[in-house]
Image 1 (cartoon, rainbow over the protein chains, first blue to last red):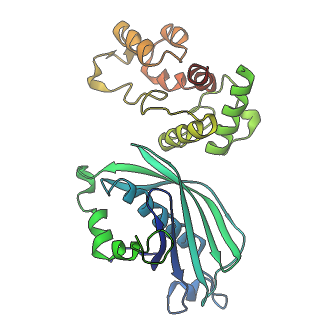
Image 2 (cartoon, each protein chain N blue to C red):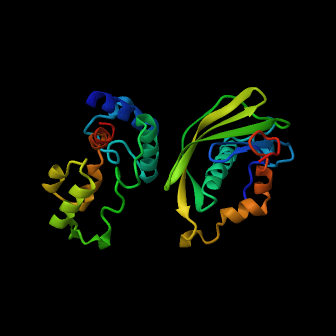
Image 3 (tube, each protein chain N blue to C red):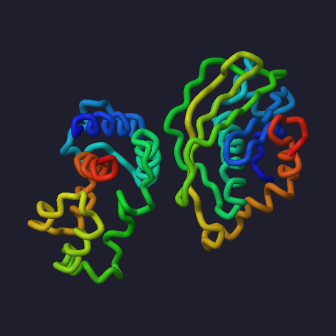
Length: 160
Length: 126
């Protein structure tokens, strides 16, 4: 099964910014061990969720021509927790994009509360790279109806 | 002007590589002294583009595959005269004269210095 750490997009401004939702639930088993008696969303998985939000933003800009690979997290600061019942909003703003990759600035918030903020960098790998024969991000995005949820359009109203 | 460029380059490298500003001296090598890895070069390019409001085409600041085995510019672990000429063409911002005195392939990474970035930027913002 594929590694999904966003539930849906709520805003998508092509080539500029995106927002996605991650609902934190006690039904997720990893919360039972992280930590026993004090379930909080692991910071590493929040980074993955923010990277998926930003990575799809970058991939869509190039029509999924490249495989977008998380390359580096130059900075990430955590200010607060996300607990079961919280709805995390991951926001990504495309700061740079070029032939070789791109970078985004990201935040994670619960309501007005800032949970995390930082920067994430991606590298582009060619889709025909033999080492990547089993990765098909375009297919992944379409198969999971992520493109459908991207039709949220500019203001999240459903108008594209 | 040169001082302004150095200060901004220094700030860029502190952010990209997580080093202290006093480590970023003009002579410091990016890989040997500042611990840069391959992906950091892309990060550095992005930050320079933003901080100086310039575009840096791929491979201009940090040429790729300098020491490729099939380049024909390397023999017995040493960069040939043709290779040196090629380096001068590809990297006019690097100190090729110093490298040419002892052109071992293993020393190619030392061409990437803080000064090299400053010289490159000076030609773009000048």
